[in-house]
Image (cartoon, rainbow, N blue to C red; front, side, top):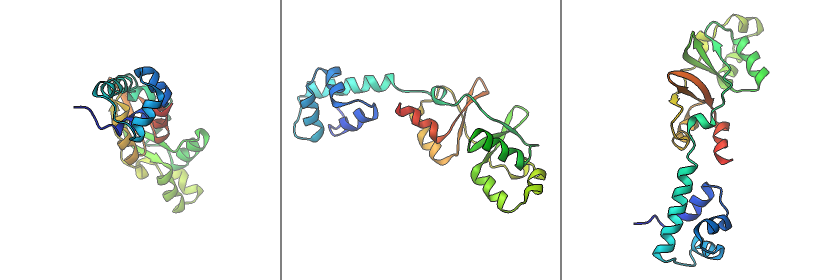
Length: 184
């Protein structure tokens, strides 16, 4: 049994294909693809099957992994760093969250949101005394580098970031802006 015909347009757009490009891959005319997507035409079973096979094949080729889209430059902070250190590093690198490490283990996260809350309650001299271990948020999720990106999109929506590991070593970080790489 084939998927519903009205899913063709959504699958095509998800892959970033034009109707013309899909037509060239399938051997079906651009006009026919347009008519199928608009519901003005019911293709034969063989034509519909061919379209779905091509879309499935292209989707399989484009399934990116976490290791493909993560940013390899990970800025790190230590639990002993101060709130002031975190602010300075975020401004210097124009980033909105930084994982906090204790030795080689990720133990927490400092984000812009969290910093703003603590900045309101402290002055400059206090920010230099407050240790990140006192104010950090919980550790972000850590996923294996081989996890398909499309499974991570919902997780990024609810976490500020996701750390990517390979052989138990953190190799990258994924933020909401990194998921835009899927659209490229």
